[in-house]
Amino acid sequence: MEQQKIPVSIEEISPEWLTGALTKSGVMTQGNSVRNVDYQIIGEGQGFVGTLARLNIEYDQQVNSLPATMIAKVPTPVKKSKMIMEAFWNYERENRIYEEILPELPLRTPVCYFSDFDSGKGEKWMNKVYKRYGSLSQGLAGLYFVNAGLRNVGMKKRYILLLEDLSDLEQVSHLSGCSFEEAKLVMKPLGVAHAGLWEKPELKKFWLKDHADMSNMMGFLTSRWEPIMKNTAAGKLTPKMKSVFDWINSNNRKLDKYSKSLPHTLVHTDFRLDNIFFNRKEKSVVVIDWQSPCPGFGLFDPAYFLMNNCSMPLDEGQIRELIMVYHQGLIEGGVSNYSLEQCLSDFPVGLLLAVRYWLIIVGGIEVENDPNAVELLGVMLDRMRPMLESLDLNQLNM
Image 1 (cartoon, rainbow, N blue to C red):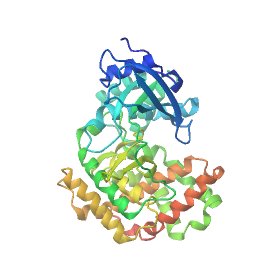
Image 2: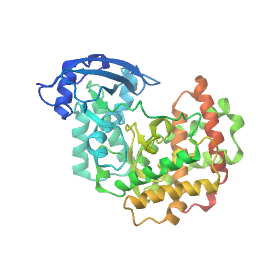
Image 3: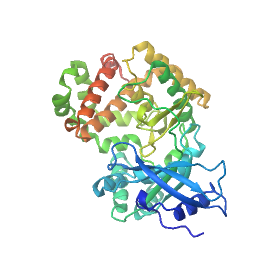
């Protein structure tokens, strides 16, 4: 059966197209076909990043191994938002990660039943740049990366993922926060996953941009924290927290340069409760949302999670215990040249990188006009306060 064009929207996913897709990927055998498919749009915040829908599927020959439901993911129909996502390669990156990285990564992620996207001018151009010049300086790397992404804009590129439906598993809301024991359950597999690509050559793929370069390109947004928080959460900030934010804003390049000298792996960059499913029976987790991962300093992810995802602020002893659990995951995953002492010593750098990225996000969204975002911002500040209060900027070995 000839494969049809990639659907632009969920509405274009027909039984005929789905038959071709699942046959091509090997999920369904030749001779079988999809008799009927309907869908329900799911998820919050539809429109900016993309559209998610649960597909309900009927087959001509029902086989137990065939999924009765799956999640379809396509880009946002909002042109401006799609342009931003394409400029930073988010759509193509997620497809490629599902195709090339996650099958070998020792971490439970959604089963990918099908992945497809249109190739574009940006991909071919960026590949030539890397082959000709090799690694690039930080400033040039950022410019080339976005330039390549912009070459894809306007081409009406299409992207689609068909993923495992995880609705039988449990999520813990970011607002309510997780328990200390749930945080421990998250840290171990994160360490094992990081070990899988710890300082590996696979990190040098042209479509994976270093986290320091990406953050540097958006670093101007960190300066917006003060007016935003003044209008939404002024009473939550202490003088020490303000001094940490100011230090980050003044030391962007210094922080980037130093972080590039530390061990790199594939960091998720959005490792938080909204992107984690808990399997209570197996005492395991499944991690979703792979649009923004990139090579970076490994301790970014645990710091980003720990600074504001637990229901109660963590004290120094609890943080140490959780980082020890993460480090045990690294050891079990095969990392042998990164001691626990070094891991604990490097955690403040991971925390500064995580706070910087968080400030970029806060600076890039309209928090003031969203009551839910204002509430979450206040909760996050309460949770991260003890970490920032105990951070000694004078002791950083940078």
